[in-house]
Image 1: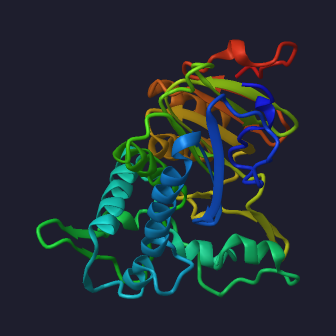
Image 2: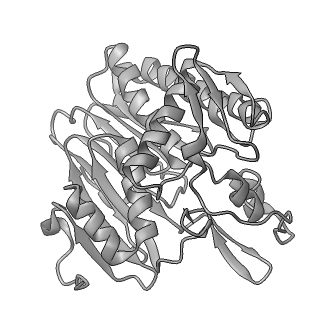
Length: 336
């Protein structure tokens, strides 16, 4: 696939370029949803049916799960913390998986840090923060450490949820990753066998292009990018290239360390992870980012997940079965 360096830039969340080379027989479509650009590669003859299927799915997920829409189901649930609330199958499923991810990561992924994000100024969609001419102010709430996910009560039989008083749920990238995974299932359901879905760098593939037999994915560093050949599965990046802002004297970003309740101070610029599903890649990338270069590498290594970890100074290392041979020659890998 030619011009692969212009393909997909996880975590940068820039508008995808229009001029990159497409695999033969494939077409590209894109739309905006869940606070990012969703870009699709689909067979030419199925691009309309595929785009409609994915766009309707993302619209449903956003209406259900957005913390920025006051009318979303998640916003209504958050406004009723302390009460038992009947929820839709979609919200119940995402919440259940988010709690399972918190358990699996010993709480390093934590879906109950909404109030902390508000306190550090991330209280509206990032486009509004980015375009604001005034500095972000604190709303006066104290930052709390994570762990409140352990007090969420799920009633499976009646599909009801009770959040602890004073706690709001915010799924972070995991919901976007799960939407990408669900989009591939939706494409399968409408008879599409080859596709790529990329939601601002949360990317998963279905099949492979018939000629190339692989998808060439650009993995961004701080100063350069690398091309990764992907034949199946998903890739996600957690990083601070875009979502950071100034709050008074404090430089803030959106990747919170549940152990402190504040933006992670791990010295990382980004972590990119390959996994079977986009949800797995999302959670693992965020946790490795929070843990930092050594502990993050060990976390990925223990789980057999390929990852690339890039420090704020641009130095990088890989973990797990990352195909180091695809990294450009002459660039020094950091020794741990």
